[in-house]
Image (cartoon, rainbow, N blue to C red; front, top):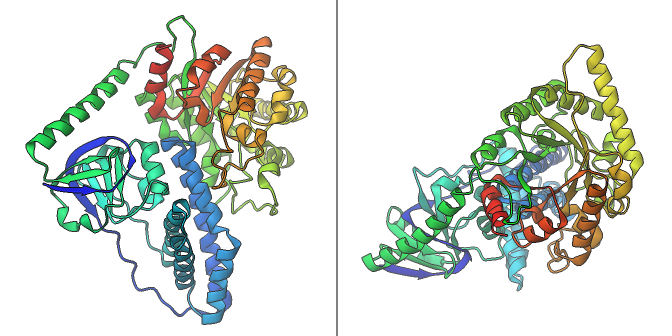
Length: 539
């Protein structure tokens, strides 16, 4: 038995064959480019395409692994737009007359080396992010495709290291655990492994070798140990521990079909947050009561063009009809700030989180908004659809949104197109202003959805994407919890339902408090439904 010790970064045990992933070596790239202006234009176009792809990946990660995972890729998008990085690429193109791809490679290695040399572990771990972003842009420039890790069956995946974008695309059914030569607990790959529930050990160094491929391994993501070719006694011990985890999962399976109700009869429905119609299968498989938040911007972020009415209608109809009569809450376009569209340019803002975003953009571009509303109302004929307006700060905004809803319905009626006139409209409570005027907003809304991620950011004057805000960005802060209660009280006083979406919705510590507040529903990633239901039923 060969015993190795590294750093346990994601808890849990796993037993299985080792599959060693060797990242494809980049082909020799052309070092000499065309003229400077042509290579600079290629760089700019590739950077914009990468930002667009990362926006889409962030939304996918948000649904698969939660808000923290999504923020990792939003940070990667910010790296593509970093002025220092851009200046370094352009400088290399101009000074060395080199190709755009070589300039991106050289600039990426230069910046990664700066992080590698830092003393702080968290900052050193950022070198992997820089290289991942550079590789993404280089792939676009060379016309190459990003590799997908596809083992033949359930394995313990071994590698020198994994990029965050590789980790988030792993098939959980085929990934029993991760064992890596490099990496640390502060790496984004480790954060993603924890969010996805995959046991992981990093920092095994040269003790981990390609020669271990195909051998049986036992790994412990808590202790940071890996045993290659374990003896019978070790196998027995690991099987027992794995059995306990299986028992926990079987206990959760018993929650399937059970009411979302505490022991003393308080109900709080468990719904799901999704990013595309493709996620509906996961909602149904995990027994979600409905869709509490469909982020419609995913459709806009995943294409290089502005989706028209027919394209939007097809996506919304697929989601609504797929839920077979269960409610689907679709949030209207929430772009701006950290979610930019290359084909819908907006002026650069010093503080975009406070600027032109979400409903502010939609009300200033009514044709854009009306197209989406028409598609939404058309989809409402195929199931139970509700419309949710984000980033509300005044009653006037809600009144204007509802006026455009009426206009969309009038147009469809004249054209003889069926829709559900009774489709509900709701308001996101995610700004301090919306909390303070919640009583007035409740007179204009059929339901509230409290977005705890942005609400926390705005209440604490803390950029949730800033890496050095640990300990400041705190969703458990008393001001956040009081704001949620204020909104819930105002809603219930007016007979309006209130739900919670965002990372806090799936926080097991918060479930008793939300029940006490009378929260009507929470919206969580599909894979958390049974766990949240079990927590509700234990109270």
